[in-house]
Length: 264
Image 1 (cartoon, rainbow, N blue to C red):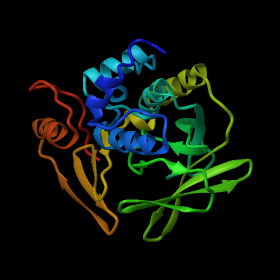
Image 2 (image 1 turned 90 degrees about the vertical axis):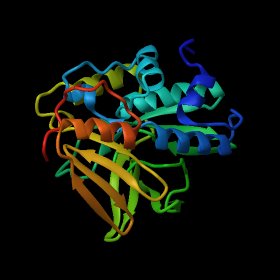
Image 3 (image 1 turned 180 degrees about the horizontal axis):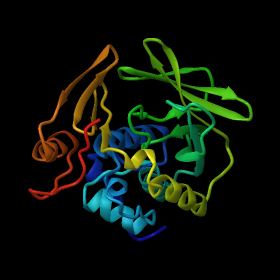
Image 4 (image 1 turned 30 degrees about the vertical axis):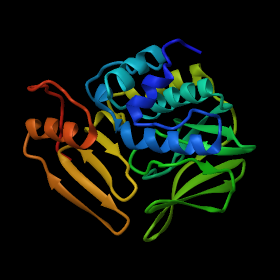
């Protein structure tokens, strides 16, 4: 395990104060703390900068720099932390279904983690519909996570993760149990972050989930999402964007920092 993974520093970053043990209770608390303290964001991609997936680079960005990232960054770091604590971790890949018109590439990273003799689905990097807590590997059983509900369903040859919406169950992504390796994520990361028509290069996207409210910044639209509906305001300019990133997402940039806050 790379020396860059300092469990005490990581715990301080996510506000975790419990005992670090490879138990289901610890896994739940770590997942919840990470999900609610480290935002999903695509600033590096939007700015045309390379997205590094080595632990040292991720540590410098997400922990020391108190930034966020997308699935490959967040789940790679989370997996390294879990393994250092003592959890067995299997790295997986999924096909995102939200808003997809057809079959998509395996361009999302998620984790299968063992704790207390059971397997759990963990994912701290999905963005807008992100899990707050792990899901026990019990297909068909609803996982109530504060104001939100999820379930894992069997679908040969693998599984589908769903989230409850007022209109019914929404497919988030499908996946199998085929283990992925660092090289698989490097390829997926490259083709997610570099093409000019990549979804992540079209507009600013920042998101952080909470027990009752999910806060999302899309372009200049600041959205608060609740189970019973959404509300939003349009930010005036880049300065307001920087203030919002600091106040709502805990990300601080020097005054005058300019990056696209593209209107949506």
